[in-house]
Image (cartoon, rainbow, N blue to C red; front, side):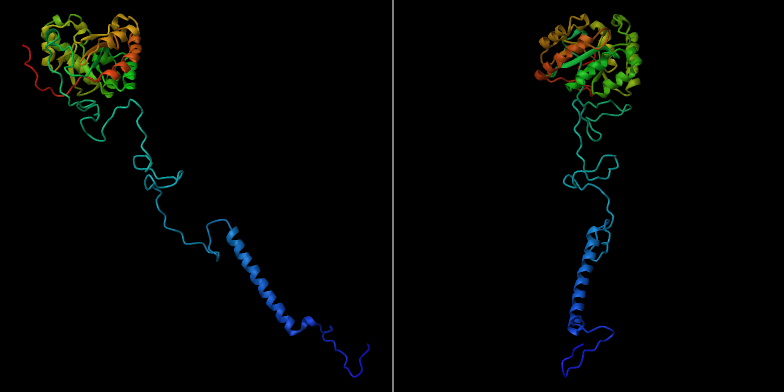
Length: 348
């Protein structure tokens, strides 16, 4: 080693020569840089944990927020939860806050509670309570029977049923046009098909007595025999629909007599004839049946048709023309069955 003259040679400590990085200022700088880098790395780690950790949200310190109290999931109303949010069912099984679906066409209108328009249970007074008074005895029909309604509405009547093939088809056509009619029932058929009697009553149609077996000479029998026949028929109808209001009677074939009209009245029934005959019993074709009815009806008419007593498919087909035609021109109603008022004197 060459030394300058008068200078002391550098000494070596710990086997190494002192360099500039071991100076106090250099060490302080390294310590400061280490602290800065360490802070940055630690912050990045915490941020990665917050953003990348699955599960409930966490705050910046990594702690989960306090859970909110559990609340029932019920809809607050029409403007409540977003679409697709589950809601709790109501006690009736419907979803709270859900819109009520509209009734399908033809569904009978009923009130929410007891009232004059609400359908009753089978054991109540009638399937549909009717506060319209029963028609009084007639002055224009045979032997005191009625030819018309005495008002502006038209009454469609169907005789000789019920029939398992044709009565349901007639009911379906009436329901399609929201029309109520009157069904004149034969007692032995009502006893054989009580479910059809219930279907007629449940749809709001009027029930009418048409004798037990459609006996053409019933009117010439004794009043006791007539009474027994009509009473037996009413019992068969009420066996299907207890406490049904049976406010009308129609004589088989329209063969009225004084005894038939008087006996029916004593049993609380008005004898009802017709002023428009569809002649469907002749089976002239659906077009002829429809023409007989639509051309003959006037305000207040009572129309004679059949849902039994033979092949009535032509009648069913004719109704598809008759009903839309008459609905446009008249009010169509069933015969009223409410308590009578202002009845004329009963016949002797």
